[in-house]
Image 1 (cartoon, rainbow over the protein chains, first blue to last red):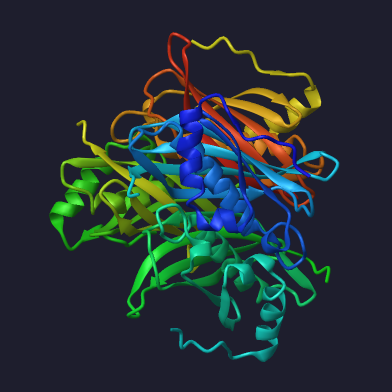
Image 2 (cartoon, rainbow over the protein chains, first blue to last red):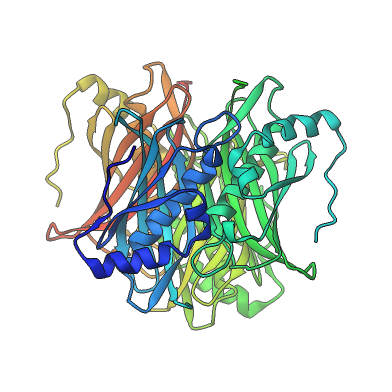
Amino acid sequence: MNAITPTSSDPVLWQRVHGSFVRQGLMLHLGARLVSVQSGRVEIEMPYAERVTQQQGVFHGGAIGALADITAGYAALTVADPEFEVTTIEYKINFLAAHQGGRLLASGEVVRAGRRVIVATAHVAHIDEQGQRKDCAIMQATIAPVPKTY
Amino acid sequence: MNAITPTSSDPVLWQRVHGSFVRQGLMLHLGARLVSVQSGRVEIEMPYAERVTQQQGVFHGGAIGALADITAGYAALTVADPEFEVTTIEYKINFLAAHQGGRLLASGEVVRAGRRVIVATAHVAHIDEQGQRKDCAIMQATIAPVPKTY
Amino acid sequence: MNAITPTSSDPVLWQRVHGSFVRQGLMLHLGARLVSVQSGRVEIEMPYAERVTQQQGVFHGGAIGALADITAGYAALTVADPEFEVTTIEYKINFLAAHQGGRLLASGEVVRAGRRVIVATAHVAHIDEQGQRKDCAIMQATIAPVPKTY
Amino acid sequence: MNAITPTSSDPVLWQRVHGSFVRQGLMLHLGARLVSVQSGRVEIEMPYAERVTQQQGVFHGGAIGALADITAGYAALTVADPEFEVTTIEYKINFLAAHQGGRLLASGEVVRAGRRVIVATAHVAHIDEQGQRKDCAIMQATIAPVPKTY
């Protein structure tokens, strides 16, 4: 169903993000998968399943929000100092259309990397079983570097 | 662990929200539970579990956001016309502190009920095993009534 | 038209906020006036005038946003260390109703005062010529303490 | 100081936006100027002046927010039905850097044009006296078409 191969031009960066990603109980539970990692840019996808739906059978806004949040957060992580993790201070998301089936592909991008605050955006697209892509949601997020505790 | 009994002063209102709530794959999957329903106010809780954590072991921002989102949404549903469901247009959430263990209790409240747009806020508190309550997150959400399709 | 007397239980706190407020070209230009200052809470008002209107004659969302922003910011300033100013990292505002005439009264309140980030909310009410109060807008803002440069 | 000539590929569209713009007391007062109008895209600029500053002498967040708000709103107006005006339901803005002198150039773009709700983003750049461009702020806004009353 999904021919995307995880990629990064930088194995160290990939390992940094992947090492954090697999520790996320929520993301594993929702079936999310890391797709690509570059400096300042990360992609994560989430296939459609009953566990990510709301009451009318489409992708749940909460699942879309969680996916966009971590995608923006991992984009931020790629530009944070190596001994830091990141934490989301706040985010805002607009839902553009409801979708059923297929999968979501979220792309996070760093807009400004400050020492204390990183601003990132995320765009979530829906890709149906035929590969057609449509807008799903957009996010602006504010992220802080924090000391890594694991 | 949790002595709260589901309550509403209005059984019809309770049934309306509960009937939608149990159709939410995501919420059931995350272990969320409807706590109280009043006109313009809804409470939903979510116990701590591995499935709602992030990489450092605390509640995942995505799970907190999903919980706050549906709590604001169901508060909106209590004031929407009976033949309508609601959909979230957008929301913004600020995370106030990280928490581990215990449970989250989200309270949603309608601030303005327009014909086309409903504005609601949600407050998420963390309640630890000893019953101590601390702030976790605050949300502002914009919600639209939409025709019910089930 | 307006019998509110500027007040604070703490003259030092009042002076701190007022000393910054009068340096704000925009606020003076828009006719805003500091109403009250307490630790963690500030009120600022803005009378109706042509200069704060939009194309249909009601208060301009941009003027409401600016008023709410500085009210949240000054609430944050009251809890920041004395040698710091504050700067807004981001805010989100929902407009609840359009109003003409009278004045706006914005109330800012600190929700969480962290060392690096302060979260505050602002509520903007409209008060008409007869003194009747109605909701106008609500805001969530994220504010950072920054070194004072004047 | 500013060689940009107001432009639009479509004089009717230009007139529609311009006719609304000149009715905005706030925008005229702050010295804002309509730069370009296309279907789904609008640019507005605001030169530096004492009236748009905050207490440390840089562009006031409230002025930046007002500028971004109307730029997103006018982008939305270009795609709304001809007999409608638009009103901002809510917006969220992240401030990326503080700037002094020169001018701000805001670019608004429609992301989704629904019948009841239009989602738009705005990007605000600072352009200094030498023409160098830097990021200033980004916004996501939710806008509603409303009947025109003038």
